[in-house]
Length: 258
Ligand code: UDP
Image (cartoon, rainbow, N blue to C red; front, top):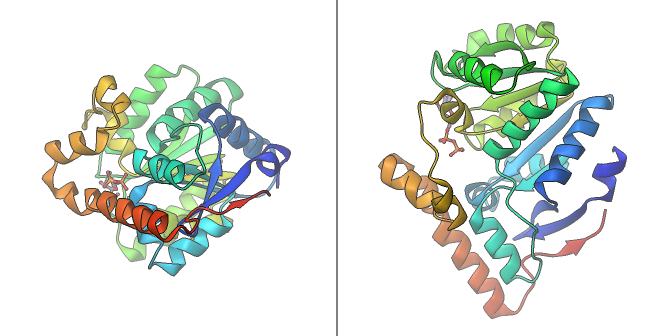
């Protein structure tokens, strides 16, 4: 455990572990992981992750063991606040990835992009390098590989010399993949970033800033892509869990220092 990670408070939201931290603290903590020895798994936990972890014990255990768990969605910060444990801000995967690319462009740490449809990671790499001069992307691979290709991809990542691996397969597949292979990937930090490569490649537009600020990014995603309904449906589930916990007068989020 690095000093910054040790100092960050932890809460529980419906039994799921989350760190109480700002974006700046998240970036500083990951920067510390990049300097420290060992391999660190960072989870950006959105509403769907908290809801899935109610039944998916493997996911819940992975979140329990992760080096850092950031609150990635409006639903998560809303629920934590209702249950008496306000979190300072959302730390989303896409925003954290942008901040970490900026950091790596100056620190010299190397990144690898894994996931999304063929061609997307390469396009994202190109645009990220243009946006953050000095950024070293040492490899990319799409996320639609066959099981028999997996060992080769793991070996490729380990041989690439990457310090930071972004995995974009969607929740919970990316978290399970990272947890299963982390020790063999040779990276210091691995983060699941969902649809972020689609955004950085320019194939998917992020909601306008005012929509993000109004906490309506989920609605924008749904309108653009109705197949997102299964993910969006987790928001009313989280609201229901939270209202039920409030009615019971129980603490859905338990406070625990680290
Ligand atoms: N994806 C992938 N391999 C798969 C399934 C999905 O690489 O077998 C990619 C998909 O192309 C997309 C990302 O995983 O880029 C999932 O994005 P989504 O926005 O659904 O993730 P979320 O952030 O909602 O978890």
